[in-house]
Image (tube, rainbow, N blue to C red):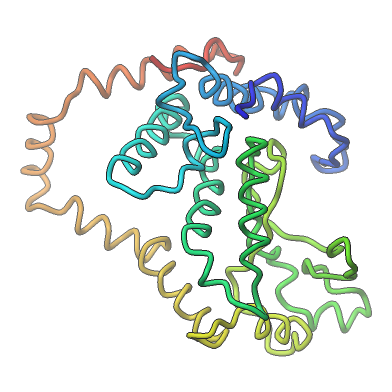
Length: 298
């Protein structure tokens, strides 16, 4: 199915608990802090559901029509179709909505491209495939939360105070699933999402023995122990996602000689009319007090 903006907005009125300081937000689609962003998310869904965009923003599989970012690419043409879809969403939001609905959906879709890598007893490929179909068939907006709050990274402080460590953890498990309690951050877009995946980008404190055991159990693979796998993920992040990586990307992408040569070359070759239009369209999309005038990009 393809949700409309109205349908997605309605899905957010599900009793979710959101606070801004001490204020509880009753409806994230109406509160002044969130309503404009909620309209932007709705505009993405409306663009996908528009019959005029049918072949660009969606595809058919298993008897239904689904958002293009759930397409499991098997050819160059499939990759091209996905790219155009991502580009349309980026154009619609002027590239300023980094955790749009296609973000985590693509990460899940990538995982199911090779489910046989998830081997028992530490992983269940069937569960992943079932979840992928559930997300695809219901056109869900999914985000993730991946970091503990800074103040929760040293459990010794809480132990000295004789209070619970607030880091998010599993506190109960039964046949229906797990119950988690605690705090996790970097959940960009969570107030507008239907599901939140929980992950971890930081190593555990040395004396977090209970969480360390879980880490060793669930992060190991037949090819690698948990610590080696964690180090590989950290290396990938350091090389492509950190401030350190950003400096090297800047050197590789932009350094081409003396600064005046680079500036003059950019001035001569850049499509300024196109760039100016992007800026003008973005500024025209909202008024002076922050209200949305239009959301769709041409």
